[in-house]
Image (cartoon, rainbow, N blue to C red):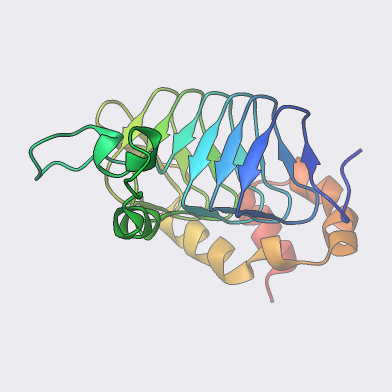
Amino acid sequence: MLSDEKPLLHGDVQQANSSFGRYTEVGPGSVVLNSELGDYSYCGPNCDIANTSIGKFSNIASNVRIGPTDHPMHTASLHHFMYRSSWYWDDAEDDTAFFAARSARRAFIGHDTWIGHGAIIKPDVTIGHGAVIAAGAIVTKDVAPYTIVGGVTARLIRERLPRDIAERLMDLAWWDWPHDEIRAALNDFRALSAGSFLDKYQS
């Protein structure tokens, strides 16, 4: 059972400079660097997440990569000997300015999102609340809330919910409800359409 006290990080997870909210899980073989995973969010096995802020209730399938770092494109070489220089020479220091600039290019994943198997989300991209990223998609641009995108590079497939329903769900912000309140509404989450749920819970 998941815990509100500590995340479930499977045995071979690698993480550094990252934080994990309540009831979170990181699948085996995953790497999480310089990132935040919001309450109730999880990722499956073999994910690579870097420089990313992930909201609450995000559903991330296996083999997803978010915020993959880039190589320098404007210099004479693409190779990391230029910035991981200490790996190659005893008298050379790493390029800390390069690493700082790269880590500042963050991806943002909204609440209640679903990112399908093997998807890649580039740095500087925002995935809106309630959005769905299809399996295998490569996302290079922002994704609007409650839309579904897919393909290489990702394009709009359709809206997940009508725009008025999407806006009402964002106003309701059920993802900020207390744990016990979500439990009390569990049967309605399961049984009601989004519109009916809003009619019942939105004053």
